[in-house]
Length: 275
Image (cartoon, rainbow, N blue to C red; front, side):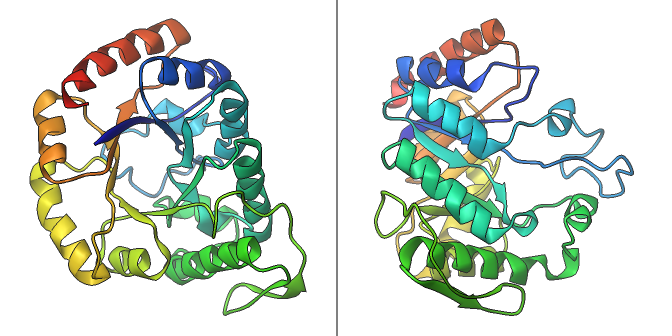
């Protein structure tokens, strides 16, 4: 089992150029960054975890720009979106941004995708929350077409363009891995259709085992599982290892640099027994 970190990078916490080397120095192999373009003041949609929405949601850096800074400051770290809110993103721009990240990192980009939860945020991007699942599927497929076809075209309900040239192409072939977030039956179908891995968020091992079984029934394959926002408690890490999880992305709180480095030291000690 491999170990990485998932976090919200903001203007108030450790910077990306400092975080990347700090992770590699402590033996972590991946960094996945959350995304929120903005948070509407109305706050009609309840926060999934309950209570007030944490401050970091309001101040999140753009994940692909931040990962570009990490790419330059690191050597081997996997650089992932966790998750890119593809229902709020133009697929042509997104395909170019991820391919550019893959190029400058020499093939280390991972495209984590999901449909999101904040309905007001989606509406501000012109997205109807009721159709966001179908929109997500089309945009992901359109991105893959732009990555893999020299004269890419796509014709769907929401995404439609005639043949175009779109470069750079990704370094990874046939394209960067697509990690699918979510925990529904349709999520598992998406993993089967275009995913490289399933990326559940914050799920304890006791609840995760039956979901892995169901996911693999749907996909019909030993699909890798990458747990996003995972706890670092020893019993949780033992549980994930017992389930055959490929990679655990420990949840790193958004803190100033000195506090972040101390937290990473604690995490490195916690995972040392599982390497």
